[in-house]
Amino acid sequence: MSAETATTAGGGGGKVLELPPGIAVKDVKAAYGRIEVLHGVDLVVPPGSVFALLGPNGAGKSTLLKVISGRMRPTSGEVLIGDRPVGKAPPEKLARNGLCAIPEGRGIFPNLTVRENLRIWTYRGGIGTKEVEDRTFETFPRLKDRRRQMAGTLSGGEQQMLAISRALVTEPKVLLLDELSMGLAPLVVGELYELVATLAGQGMTILLVEQFVTTALSVAGRAAIMVHGRIEQQGTPEEMAEAALGVYLA
Ligand SMILES: Nc1ncnc2c1ncn2[C@@H]1O[C@H](COP(=O)(O)OP(=O)(O)OP(=O)(O)O)[C@@H](O)[C@H]1O
Ligand SMILES: [Mg+2]
Image 1 (cartoon, protein in one colour):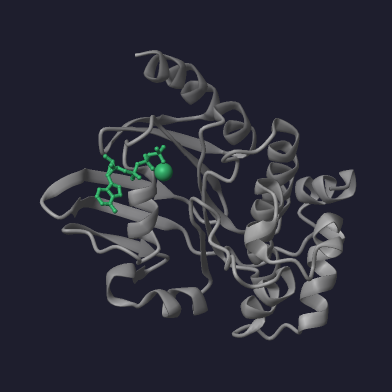
Image 2 (image 1 turned 30 degrees about the horizontal axis):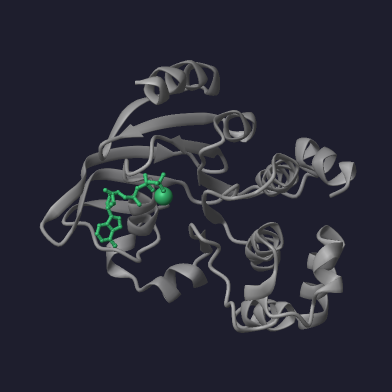
């Protein structure tokens, strides 16, 4: 990705007139069968900010993102996107209202080609196929060369590029990212996070889960650490960098 995109992020471009909705998680409990994995989570992501959710494996981070995106019902508590409760709307409706969740493990259709994947995301927007392809291939030229390839046969990094293209073309107001870096070389991770910074600069509310603490904290305005289904600490990226060390060492 080019350096220009990153610079535009800082500038904001004057495009942001209206703030996107924020996210409020209120005392959320969630379980798989009888096993409770979220034990009362409270979290506020202010409109237009980037929030990093850190924590060890199995802490419940992906589960929380599933609850926020409406793919899993909490056993109690509630989630608000702006002033709308998530629990009452089906995921398609949430998407129409500007929520985009890119799940762990990429969330692309492996048996469709790159182009077909891109085409699917244009269905509900007022954006044409050509523009979608232009935008995506400008950001990720590698995908252009592979546009006729089955998405499932792309390399890990290429699949992740395709996955995040969805946020690029559908222009969501609220973006949930689960371990964008999974299985990727640090250089690619850096490029993808440059793009996250650009998207943030365009005025999106972003909640990201990430194992690469330093990378996540470099784009986030605030962060929290989740341990055993609870938010253990939250604060500034500097504070959380310090705290994460303790948590991961323990
Ligand atoms: N579909 C499922 N059925 C049963 N248990 C599950 C399911 N998904 C997750 N869990 C369990 O819930 C707990 C929280 O898992 P979750 O995936 O939310 O953790 P995480 O913080 O995202 O971890 P990681 O960093 O490894 O991705 C774990 O103990 C996990 O084994
Ligand atoms: Mg996870």
